[in-house]
Image (tube, helix red, strand yellow):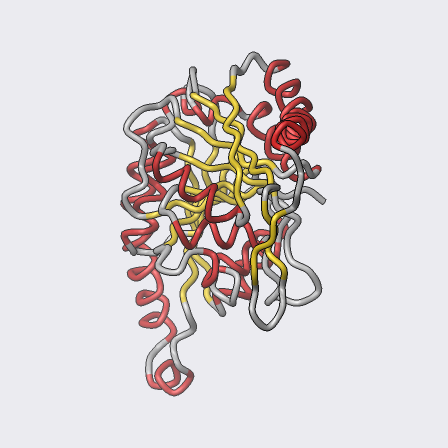
Length: 301
């Protein structure tokens, strides 16, 4: 596997490095990790007052703070590691790097203070999500798994994006350890009552009989789980099904991830629309803002 890791000297980047070094099964195979650090330009008035050598030494010293320890940790873990730094606007430089890099996976740390609500409104991680169709693993501080085999949840909504997430897990199964505990998670809507929108929202009974609701839910769950189960079974990966009922998928999935102490939650995502302020997925944004579980967003063209 080839991994691209944008890093700085923060504790969040250190958590991302620690997550990768914890992947013992993955690192038994050839694993290439490219570390990249981006330094902002020294202000023009300052650079004019200093020699080029002084400015270059400043960039190298600052970049080394992020790259040296990360490189050492990854090499100790068995990864083949390269490291470099570039100078310029972080968002623009990283967008170009991500768009042209042949990585299988991008791994980044995130403070997660407001989850993807911040990530999707102009941060560096937002730039990565916009710039690439490659899978993006967002690691929170303190989210490093203790065991190689992960407790893994795959959130599904019945769309091709959820199926793409399952295909990624099947293709790169070594990333998740020799015996990951995989849960397929889907939330079906509450059908006994519905919320009628308006100036004052109100709940009204649907009048659907309980046995009809049960049959509808059963059919809905099976239609979502069946194709994903087939993909995982074909890769020799066992899974269990988590059937949630509710009205706000993001809240229900986040609550389950926290309660079940998942090491990683995988979600398919359609990516941004024409506007950067279009959420990568309202469910993903809601999940990320409500739990500190590491999140893997899988996008496909």
